[in-house]
Length: 82
Ligand SMILES: [Zn+2]
Image 1 (spheres, rainbow, N blue to C red):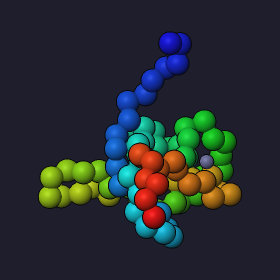
Image 2: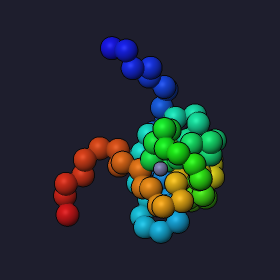
Image 3: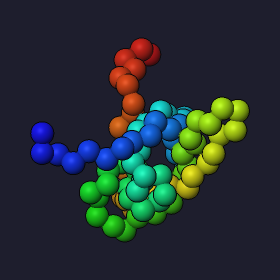
Image 4: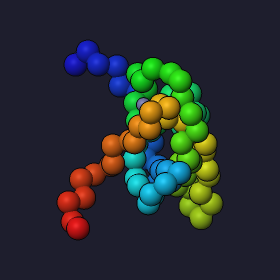
């Protein structure tokens, strides 16, 4: 494999609108330096809610960004139950 793999963290993403979802983010995304839906997305980026890293009993919130046209991140795990 030639793809460079960045370490990801599973977090709870709470978008500005809608229910929280579990997603994986890279360090760049966690620190609000890349679109929450993809690190290769072009700017401009705008505030897009927060993610919460799962530390036991004390979740830590991080402000995240997304493309101005409204990206949503892919959900971690396929939940087909409705
Ligand atoms: Zn994007």
